[in-house]
Image 1 (tube, rainbow, N blue to C red):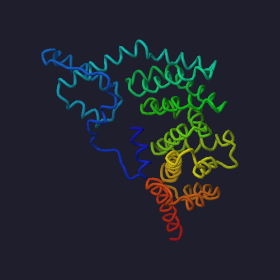
Image 2 (cartoon, helix red, strand yellow):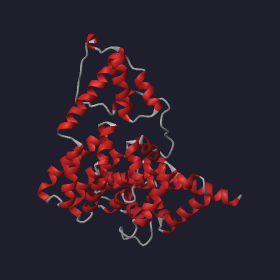
Image 3 (cartoon, rainbow, N blue to C red):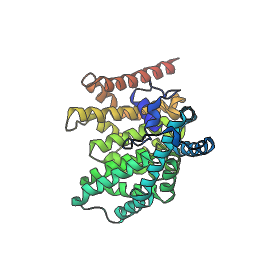
Image 4 (spheres, helix red, strand yellow):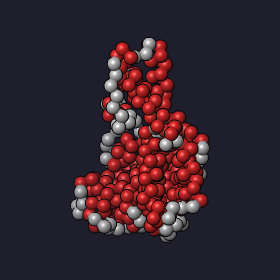
Length: 340
């Protein structure tokens, strides 16, 4: 779900979540490194299969439409899904347990890895992102219950202490993104008073990939709900002093203006910035309140966003120009509404 929200923002709000998801929507949660074959004679009896499959589906934290699609699968495929899930649980119970990752984050919180240990730390934190993305709903619940979110925040905050820690921040940000794919993860994240502040503060990191993931998380949260939009606006306001801004949103306009080490990297950052700007102006309370939209847009215009857009227009790919067009279209529509 969370990835679909960002895709919608990336595509200028033209791409909606499909009413009837195809098989690819579900296969994301299935481990691609496991290949099983099944003899129909090894199937359990119908009651046992139905019970095991209900437990399997409940673990996936899927929408009703996706659940219905799974229930319509043949019995052989259902049992293979159950067996693959059991194999994944067995693996998680050994090397990739919640306890292991929470303990790892606790150690990094107290004693941040030395630079020569960065490759190992990056690999371990990439494992955390994969585990949160691919394991069951109960795995995420246990991770949260053990205090995993608080420790993720603490380590991410420490990444901002020195510029050479950006590479540690990237798998952590991907872990936040994976956590937000779970309904439980989203709920706990938005209820936390500090989680979104920690992520928003990552806009100060110099690494372009860190910046892109941060912007994508903020954009998707804006599209998620009125609460998500309100929390992003609050976080960008409260984190402004940490970012050294004269006014809130200054960092967004600066990142839109600033060139990166390559043209491709520059365009990706600029597109992610415009995704967030347009999500702020088109989602949540902005969707229903002309006054709120005008206020936000005025702040951005006072920071020079229109000058940057005019200078960059037609100098990049169509995706970025599409976002410039959306920004201008919404501005013109609001001006027309004011004049009537």
